Image 1: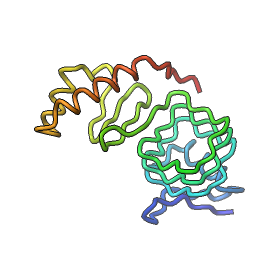
Image 2: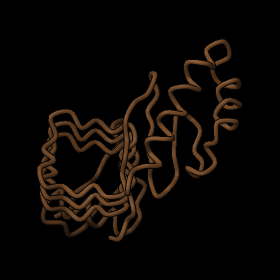
Image 3: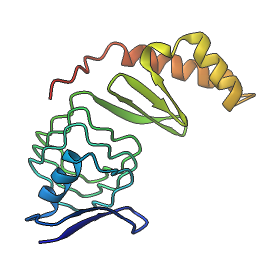
Length: 163
């Protein structure tokens, strides 16, 4: 059957012509490298789905069943995972969260914080200070401290991806 994957604003992101269900439609979309940022997948049954490397940044996955799904290397920055079932999901290569009101994600060795995205190695204390001076003048000390701590922690994680 024909299944459409839509953006949270209703725009069609991908159309699967012969999909049995949303899970197989999303797998086909990921395999074809479809643009899935902001996908609306509320309550979707994606159990055991192969979503390796999927770019689901900003997706609404609230209440979705992702149990056993392979999300290795997936970009989930800013995704809504409220009440999502993640038991047994493989999340290798993914780290995501919020810091001082901005979403961050580490995906394939690149850290995105707010509107900035660079290789993790680029996020030196000097680089962080310059970005904070540009984006949050007057609040630099708080942001520099928090971001420096985040980067130090991220560097300790083993996020190698071998999908």
